[in-house]
Each structure stands twice: as structure tokens, then as C-alpha cells.
Image (cartoon, rainbow, N blue to C red; front, side, top):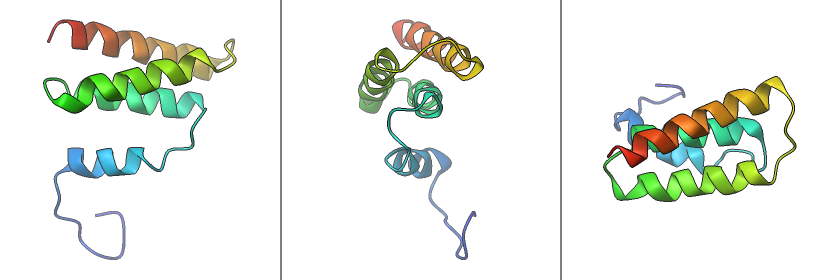
Length: 84
């Protein structure tokens, strides 16, 4: 779909693979992982992905638009996963 060949795998499977290529230590990675954790709700991967996002966020400098947005997604992921 996004390359020179047609990838017939489900979007969630492709997203899980793409997550491993995210630049670590960025607010973008925190936000992406939080959204992915929500998408994986009810699977064994959800908690692991959320924990990775949480730990990454704890080490990053706050005080930017990107940090607020990523932390809001992280909060939403936590709420979604607790209600699972």
C-alpha cells in the first residue's frame, strides 16, 4: 500500500511492525505507541506497548505542544486499557 509492492497484511500488523522503526525518545513515538496500544486493546501486546510509551514519556522534556498532545494520548490509552 505504501511501497512499490502491495502489502496485503492487516493494517494493525503493519503498524506493529512499523512501531519498531520509530525514533526512540521522541514525543512522536510516545503518541504513536499510545495510539497503537489503544488499537491493540484486548491483545497481549497492548500492555507492553503502553508501558513502553509510558517509560519513554517519563524521560522526555515537557513543555511543548508535542508533549501535551502525546501525554493526552498516553492518558487516553491508559483509560482505555483500564476499561478493557
